[in-house]
Length: 417
Ligand code: EPZ
Image (spheres, rainbow, N blue to C red):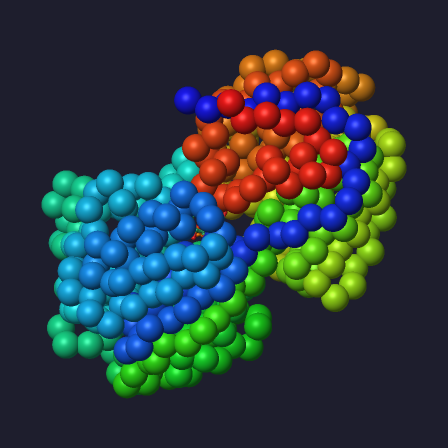
């Protein structure tokens, strides 16, 4: 089992490039099975979740080849309508194959999806929405038998919460449906618009008012295209956090600063200087970081839940007290116990985490329990006295392509052994 050995770092300095977005590329891969000709996708990060999605595509009958960050997918001969338990359970976004499989083959037998354990992650919104479009479901133990009479029929769907995955599944079901589908209270994350953009270029008719209403007019056919996936905003936030905590000065390249407005605002309130220009963010951090009274995670365009653990790291050594409120997932403070082992002062009570900045963080053995928690521990370890040994790298590998090499390139001292 590999671990990271992280030594205390001086200020991070230099330039770093951001990989393509994990949460964007996964639904786009699922969308390719709706295309009647092959697709070439650029800027696809090399991650274990991406590998699993490509395995699902191959299992369904698609031809897949990868060269660096380019992936060629010919899904024109997809025939298989079940996904094995092992592949479904390895990540959450396996569920977004449900809509496209039903749309294409009228049947899909799937197991419940896996993914980070952040508390309950039901799929009721996916299933009720797809039922409204005409799907039928029968559950037997963990296997879900899904079927569709003929084709999906457009309808109006009002989501109880703006679920990212459910919005993607509805869009993917509705693009080839008969008639018009309206999603009210749709998720507005940039990854949703990347998927819509991809599908519209393939011939879909998706219209959004950018305030949570999406209208999809079903078309008869989609064709394959060449497309470049958007940059990963949470990876960019991770580099910003690593720079902030070490008092560094780093230019983050190939990034879209408009996707990071709420995160940038928090870094500025922390005392960092953030300069944005086309596809670049420079972050300059000062020695003493300030606390911020209250940070609540909310759906986009608010402060993202995925950035909560990652930004908690610099607040652990800031001057003063920062209160986090995690409103999206019930159990997304798993990193806190490990932060405490390193000398942080944090008290969690339900949705609330009260972070009192301390003067010193001490390196020790810590265990990552989910993807962004792993990134948070890595960031905190950069300023820990002595050495930190980070275990649980399978979580980190789900979302970060070359983070050890990138951070070392900026001056960190991390070994993977
Ligand atoms: C996506 O998960 C992301 N994953 C998550 O990123 C991200 O944290 C999350 O959106 C919120 O932004 C991918 O895109 C692969 P949701 P998803 O459906 O789609 C409740 C990361 O670290 N809900 O928007 O699973 C749910 O319990 C990952 O990269 C229902 O109640 O999130 C949660 O409280 C972790 N019923 C809320 O909605 C449903 O059927 C938001 O979940 C679906 C969701």
